[in-house]
Image (cartoon, rainbow, N blue to C red; front, side):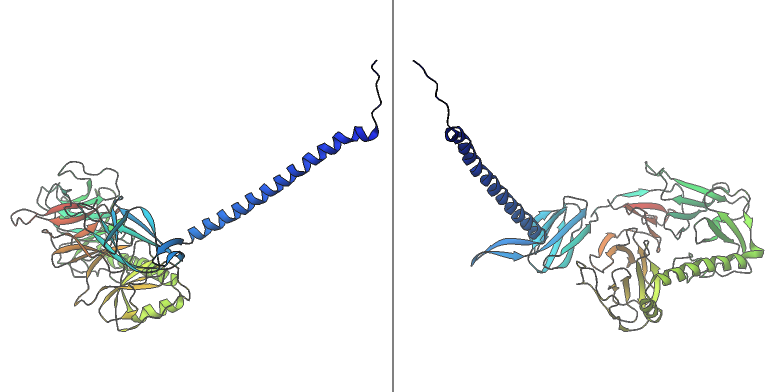
Length: 444
């Protein structure tokens, strides 16, 4: 016979004690694994930070060791160029390389282009950047003017080119403007995107001397008199050169963005117009000088003969008016700047570039007898140097002097395109029986 026995209090509590005993080790395991995960995350984060700072495990004769490195970031135009470090092919642009601290020679090369080479100083935990602009060995040459061109003059902004034509009819002769920022550009050989602003029906504008206004909106055309040196020069960005009124000339004020059906004769008020333009130039130069720190401004007044400011107004191209030593004006300069090309010893007559932002001074030309033909490249990091019947481009630190064109061209009629893709020259291609025309030298 089956009988039911009551469960005692001790027996009823036993299963619950067993459940508690099972749960306790499970909670300990969770805490243990969580602690391990946190430790691993801390270690991984620390390794990532150390890696970003340039720490690497390097293997040498004594075995593996943790070493502090610096980072070299190399970009180039065109991209995918080969990068040589101390003559060893190392990587390709655009890329970054970890290097132990020290001085290196970096070469960037690409088939069909001139090599780029620069010395750099790598410091531990510092990122040093190189942006290499390569130029083609066989640049394209394209005509952008249909008729013979007498002379050309670029505006202060570097985006418009005024030129004269005198070999056609009275309607075709006159003054033309090539807007180098215009979207409509020449596609076929011989096409032109220029527009005429004055012809020879009112006066001999094809024989005029031209001067741009400081804002590039107007042009003064001087006719019927041999221009003085000042009159035929452009109103450049230094604010130092202005045309002088010639009492034997007739002066016209022309709009640069349209055809002038009735050119405005300002002969009677030419002095007032020139004084106004000179004031505008002076005000601009004063504004630039005010942007400099007082000590730099004071030093520049004594030692700088300013040739021009860079397009971004951050660098000054100047000729040393006397010899001296330039002090360091910034107590702490930006880490990562390449100072291997800096020259703070000034030699009278030498040409320099001073970076007002980074307080870096570099020498471009050691010595010249006269004011050199140097024009800023649109990127503010290069200069176009015309001499010895060659067109060269040099970096603002004086390195990588590259001859981009050694063919025939006239005078100093050399103008970089606003986007840096080409250079405009005036040439007859060596044919003395042909009238010169405008050509572009392709740089990309």
